[in-house]
Length: 425
Ligand SMILES: NC(=O)N[C@@H](CC(=O)O)C(=O)O
Ligand SMILES: [Zn+2]
Image (cartoon, rainbow, N blue to C red; front, side, top):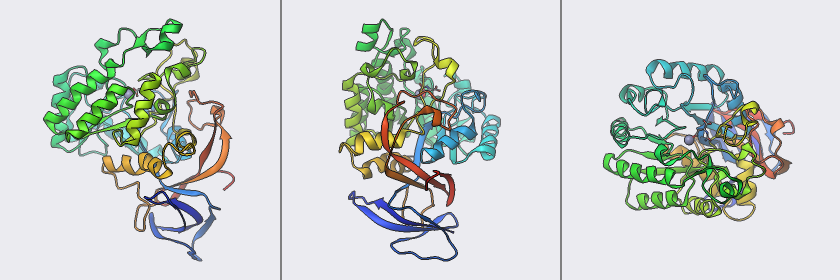
C-alpha cells in the first residue's frame, strides 16, 4: 500500500484541489483529504501536482534492430522519467512486427525489459514496404494498439483502402504517417524561408496534406478509425477539421516540437532541428496550436526518435530525421503553453493523458477512486535547464538544449508501483 499525501489534482473546471491518494493492489483506493493508514508506505508530495499517468501513442524504442540508438530498457526509463506510464512503440524496427512470429518476439522483449506499459503497433504492410498487407485478422488478437507503417506513407490508395477495410472489421485503428513520396523532390527541410535562404531542398506541405486528403476519403468509405501521426501543416489541420464536421472517424496528434518551433528557429544548420515531418512555417505552427485548442487535434504525442550522435553529426542533408521527446514533453508544454495562459493545465492533462487513452480505448488516463493507479507526480515550480547529458535515453538529439523550463515529473507510478522517483522527493 502506498499513501501519497498533500498533492493537488486538477478538476474539469481547472481548479486545483488538494488531496491524498491511497493506492492498493494497483488501484486508487481512496482520494480525499486527511487519509491516515498505518500499513502504507507514506510519501509527502508537499504540494506537488498529481496527474493521471501520461500516455504517448508515438514512440520509437528502436529495439529490436537499432540498439545503438535506444533499447527498450533505456527508452522506457526515459518514458518513466518523463512521466509517461503508457506508450506505444512504432513498427520501424528489425524485424518489423508484420507477422505473428515477429509480434510475439517483440512482445517477449517488452515483457522482459519494459519499465512502463508498452503497446506495440503492428505494421500495416509486410516490411513496411507498402505492398502486401499483413494478416490483420490474426494480428488483431495479439497485444497491439493498432496498425502503422510509421516512418513512411502508404503510397498506393488501393493498399490503404484494403488495409482500412480489414482493420475496420477487427475494430483496430490505422495509424498513419502521411507522406506522398512522389511529392518529395529530394527535400529534407520544410520548403520555406529557411530552406530557401540557406540553399536546402524543401519538403512541400502538400506531400503531407495530399495524402491526408486521400486517406480521409478512404476512412469515410471504410468507416475505420483513422489516426494521423505528427500533423504539421495548416492545410492538414483544416482537412481534419472538415473530416470531423462530416462525422468521419478521424483523430490526430501533434508533437511538442511542431507546437513550439518553426523553420526559422533552425540554428546553424543544426541537425537536431531535422525531423519528419519538418519544422514548418510560423503560420503552420499557429494552425497546429489553434487545432489543438479547438479539439481538431486530439492529442500530443512526442514522436520520440532517438538517433546516435555519430549519425546526427552528419550534415543536414545526410543526417537521419528525428528528435527525442519523452523527457522534455511535459515541462516544455507546461512552461510554454500553460504558464503563458495559452491553454489550461486541465487541457494539457487531457491532451497528454485522458484523450490518448480514450481515443485508443485504453482504460488509463483516469484519476478517481477505483481507477488503475497510473500516476504522474509533477513539481510545477521546479525550474531546470534542459541538458541532454542528463537524459536516460540514449538519444541526446534535441533542439531544446538550454531551455529553462518548469513542471518536471518527480515520481511516476505504473499499476500502483513506483517506476521513477527523483532524488529529492
Ligand atoms: N519522425 C522522425 O523524424 N523519424 C522517425 C520516423 C517517423 O516518425 O516518421 C524515426 O523513426 O526516426
Ligand atoms: Zn512518422
